[in-house]
Structure formats: C-alpha cells, structure tokens
Image 1: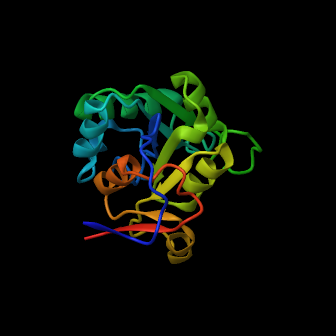
Image 2: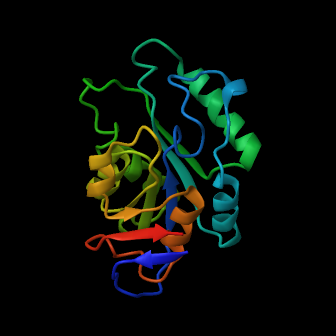
Length: 196
C-alpha cells in the first residue's frame, strides 16, 4: 500500500474518528429497522480494533430520514445500532439525525450538526477529528465542522464525489490507516489516495 500525492508530514493522530453507518460500517439496507439484517462490511472490525488499540475515541454519525418518513422508529434505529455494538464492540458515541431532507435541521449531513455533537460529547476539537463515509454528504459534514473527511467509495458513490474528494481510501481499514498516517491531519488542502 502506498500514498499517491504529496501531503505535509506530521505526527498528530486524530482525537476521534467518526464513521457513517450505512454503506460504511454496515451493508446499506434502505431504512433498516431490523437488527437481523445488519451485516458488518469487510475490514470494519479490523479498523475499529486498530483505533481501540490506540485509545482513539470512535463514534457514528448517521442520517436516518426513515424516521421522519414514518418508515422506521427511533427505537428501530437504536436496535440496529445496538446490534452493531454487539457485533464489533461498543462505539463511544452514536449521533443520529431523524429528520428528512426538507426539515431544515442543523444535524442532517452535509450540515455539521452531527459531527459537532459527537465531538462535543467526546470532548474533542472537531478540527482534530476524522470523519469516514461513503458519500459526499459525509465529507460535507466533516468540512462544515472543520474536521478531516475520508471517502470510502461504494457502488452507490457517484464518480463526481470520488473526483472531488481530497482523501480517498478503498476500504474502511485503509481509511483508518490513512487517518493515523503521518501528515493525514491537516492534509485537507491536498489530495491523497490510498492505493494497493
């Protein structure tokens, strides 16, 4: 594995790593309220374990508009989240936006609310945090909050989203390795890609 592009070198590790849920940690099942359908994606367990080994707080920031649409309840969302905790160990914080796209809330990604809330609850500076997700809204929330965003594309990620992303990794584990690499923090103005 190597890095393509020039990013400034440094030694700072992130103060926290926040993950998108659906499509990043688990297979995306639209509006899933059934814990039995939870399927952890490849390399996620290893990525989370790596952060825990380094005592870096971890959290989840997730849009769940199915609540606003009446397709699932907040209890359903919590049940799915508990199942994820059961499968790969507990996250330090879960932040969920239950609103719809037209509700005008401050928390729905790409707005910064979820990231800021998670960082406040973890008592870390958002500028020292990393957000890992699979679509532009995840990176937009990171940027709006002052955090560093890393894109892990999936089949639903749009090509322009990949092209526009400053930091791109092929797996969640590679995204975490990039977040921990010298110079990843503060590399937000330079494009880096993890390549095999």
